[in-house]
Length: 329
Image 1 (cartoon, rainbow, N blue to C red):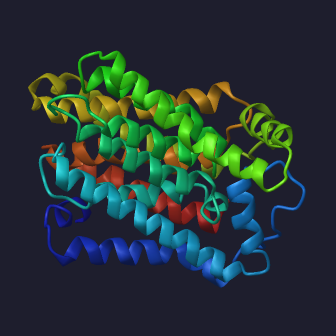
Image 2: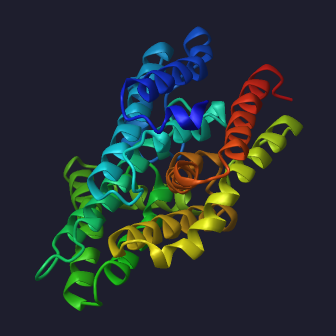
């Protein structure tokens, strides 16, 4: 069974992840999406350069996207291994992330939120390292800089700078110096980017207009098919027991684990809020929102005594993913 297999820390769970990842990405290699380049669209400058690079290289764009996905799940596993907030060495967060990220296959290749997700998770890891650090925690400067840099690829990542500010209050005692460092770290990537933009002879006002458009302009609506709605309902049923059991269990967890899960919950709250509030954010946000969802779900699956129910829920998600690929309407 899947969950029991992931209680092993050997090669078995790695093989399972490889097999499932290969199956979910196989169709994209067989029939890769067309990459047309950025053109004259209002796309964040760094991501625009990436789109132009992969123009006419559909297979290479799939490989690039898969490599970024693998890099992200490796960071996710290493993050838990380092901090140990899920009190078990497990690859379950990586496996669940692969499943969740595959819910919207149209967003799997060249999703600008994916490199942003990598930087946000790296920033979160850096913040958690500040716990019980004596003196000023300069790691908040690093974390805010990483998260803010994600906005150069995907404008929606800018809102996660709030996560760094929340971290100064959740992980540390309120300190104006650390908050100031966090703000400075968040501003630095944009100051440098504006400077390079200006020095290369481009109009800073044009850059500001592009950023504003990416932050607040409407994006095309997504078609919600019956199969997709059922799949999302199954995903929610997998996640619901995790969040319901996590809240009362928080008080019994070690302080560092409790604070880490608090940060993950805040990351999820920000993801959901910007998705429903901002017209510029669409289903590409799955790349970021799936991270805390995967951790919370994996935590429940790792320790639940209702193993049979958990197995049914997990397999239901796998089966619905297959059905959604065969009958997408």
